[in-house]
Length: 126
Picture 1 (cartoon, rainbow, N blue to C red):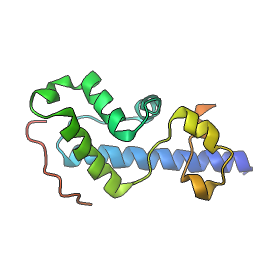
Picture 2 (cartoon, rainbow, N blue to C red; picture 1 turned 90 degrees about the vertical axis):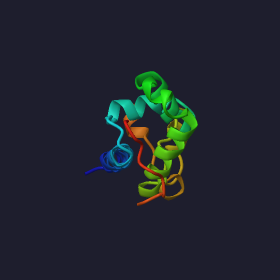
Picture 3 (cartoon, rainbow, N blue to C red; picture 1 turned 45 degrees about the vertical axis):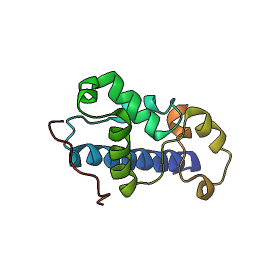
Picture 4 (tube, rainbow, N blue to C red; picture 1 turned 135 degrees about the vertical axis):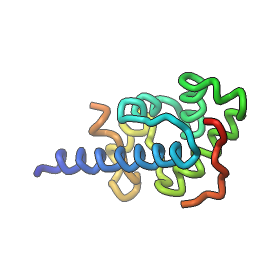
């Protein structure tokens, strides 16, 4: 296995860890949606994890905003997700810049892709 393959495998594992953390957070909160790799990477164009979550909910599940504020939902999801995997998916610009940094300093990058209890209550009726 060459260095590029090893880096892409590391990136794949990091993305899968992020997906697992998000999808577990959604399930623990009673939210009936799941993210896949395409969704996660498409949201990586938005700066900040909270903003990504809010944008997703506003676009794909606006009915939830009838019962909960976007701020509350974003905080609840992010608290659960971060309890499992505190790192965030970098934006596309950060991923490109991060490719020149040592792996230990950047956590993980998506360079290859571009080329628990937080005390948060479950959400009712989600």
